[in-house]
Amino acid sequence: MADKVLDAKGLNCPLPILKTKKALKEVPSGGTLEVLSTDPGSVADFAAFCRTTGNQMVEETQDGGVYRFVIKHTG
Amino acid sequence: MDAQTAKDSAAAGSGENAKSMSIIVTKGSLDWAYPPFILATTAAAMGVDVTMFFTFYGLPLLLKKLDLQVTALGNTAMKMPMMGMHMGMPNFMSMIPGVDAGASVMMKNLIKKKGVASIEELREAAVESDVNLIACQMTMDLFEYKIEDMIPGIAVGGAATYMENALKADINLFI
Image 1 (tube, each protein chain N blue to C red):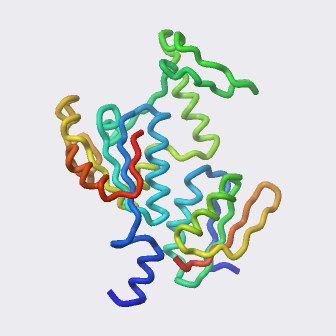
Image 2 (cartoon, rainbow over the protein chains, first blue to last red):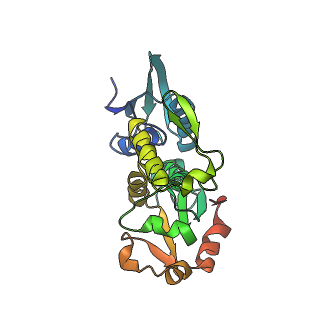
Image 3 (tube, rainbow over the protein chains, first blue to last red):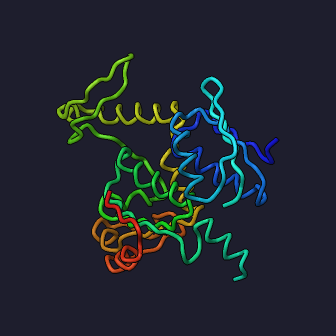
């Protein structure tokens, strides 16, 4: 179970990333943030965001049109 | 700065070792306002220090009240989704009264429907994430804008101010 959940469903680029950055501030270092998104572009974008910021993508799943990312706050 | 703080700030990309980007914003229509604000806010979220320099028709994007429009004029590839197809907007249609206003309303409705942020939202996010917003002094004089007309928290400067930022930046864009 993630420390915090961010529902970014229905939002388009770049809002899921902007809201994720904001939400990560509320997650303690080492904690996890779960993000739900319906933007197909977020698959590539969240990977790039994690690589660039030093946060760790620990889980990535897809259910129907909903993408779920679990990001460990290590950045 | 202790070791842990230094490590944190390096990983977050903030502090002295942060990457930086500058954008010259020269256009103020609804469609042209998106690229600079999307890139600035996303870069800031990725730990990049961002400077935006608003000049000529980009300057009004700093006005307190925004009323952005699109125009078909000079926008030769402009197509709008309509009734399940993409309808072209030939240049001459801009001459017909109400067409650009109608296209602007349509665009804003699409933006809302597709969950795309408004320019107001993105600008707020830019301010919140400490993007350095610089209004071009010369453009303010030229087009008679006052600093009181602009959103708070912006800086005013000229070409040298921009150059100082640009010379240090990893990415410089002109939009």
